[in-house]
Image 1 (cartoon, rainbow, N blue to C red):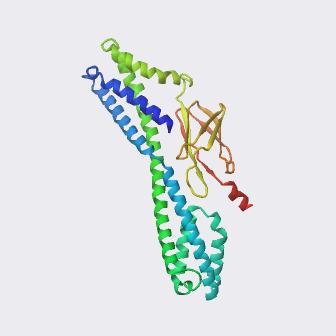
Image 2 (image 1 turned 120 degrees about the horizontal axis):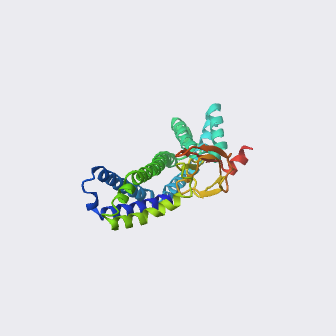
Image 3 (image 1 turned 60 degrees about the horizontal axis):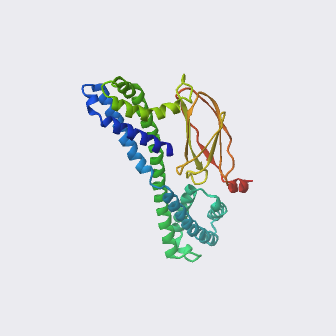
Length: 313
């Protein structure tokens, strides 16, 4: 995420420099189109960054708190359902509820929501008996409300995360498009106008040389490639921040951002091994990927909580 802030800041500086010299572009229709496209892309990047700059941790906390409340209400409701099934001599219902109670602590958020919905339906079908076996009308109404609100929160946070990932991808695409406009049109144009507009040339090239110096570390005969991806929790499906991503040959270490995303860029073509680890989670299998010039590979990791692995064993 930090790299997009830096990249957009550089683009904004270049746009300002270009806008300071409108006379240099008079009569050059294709270059004006390229300049305006560059400016439009830069404005869009700024908009996307303002969206992504809003903390996503609030959504995480809201979902976590709602899940905790639903878990408590559901645990009590399952107890009442077990008593109800025993009184009704409904062995299928009894075994189902016992299975729910056994698995409840290990449910993902999605499974928790689905189980709550089924328990509500079963209790509602046997409500008269259930009201005599450990659950009140108010508690049942609360379970229904918590189940409904949790599903809404799940949908909202899922949409929010999807939107943020889409924004990341759009930022990457816009950044690539702007770099192409710079190298294919604007760099060449400004150099050609050096004599007529020396101030434009000096200001523009001073800003652009920072980028060009960095690119010299990459094999000039090949277009740089990149590996990106997300790291998520296998139970909740939520993104995991600060997961460590390790790239070998050459060794590079980055951390995921608050959206669980990481970027390994400016890579030469070749074969790379990517690993991931985060305290409290099982270490997933490493991934070996082969990059070609200009490639952009997606390598995601889904981490299993260490506690779940131990329980399964």
